[in-house]
Length: 146
Image (cartoon, rainbow, N blue to C red; front, side, top):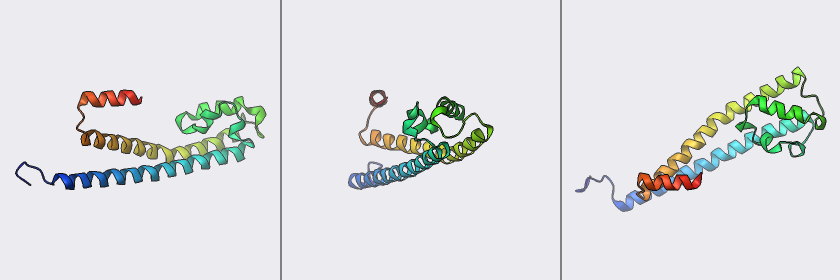
């Protein structure tokens, strides 16, 4: 500890912050790759299972972001697209198979999405601290991003 109560010198602090932000950025890239792989995997399975491309469906944006909606909404969207599907989405077997795959995908994605959110907030906090932003300045920045 130096005379001002600091444990590390300013130059060393800069290196530590740089290394931390670099590590967090790499972790975000890795987690987002895993997220994209899981999403692509589920959507690929869904296209094969239904016999239709997601891009050809009504509400394709919601189907593509299935992890942001409830299972019941996904099933309802598929039922509304029944004429475009190779199988009938009202059948019990269809719903059960879809539920299994949806649940398995969500079990992988939910903790990953939470971790991505936490890491994003940590990066923001480090940057806010790096620039010595006040609470009011942080509110302005965050309001402009939402």
